[in-house]
Picture (cartoon, rainbow, N blue to C red):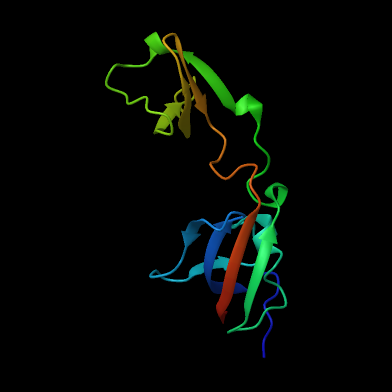
Length: 143
């Protein structure tokens, strides 16, 4: 059987869970995820698990945070004066908002993590930053 190697295009089915067992993503009910092995299209820890696998093979891989979405970076949290946020913007804890860079060229997703009478703290870290991830994967095809 052909084994996946760097540069091959593979299609995988996967289920991603946190260490507490909660599912954060899955290809179940969707088309398999397609990517080129070693191309940087997926998180490094998952990418490194694919070489050597064959079509139909299943594997469970634990990906540490530093090989997934990295550690939580305190610099990616910003306090904004509440008065600077329009009244029609929902400020519920956990709300996902979009923030523009000062030059208006880039938009980044942020999460409302603290709200007080004077300010709102927005977090631009990836929601899975700082978390170890577990993936159950199956190779569907190697091209």
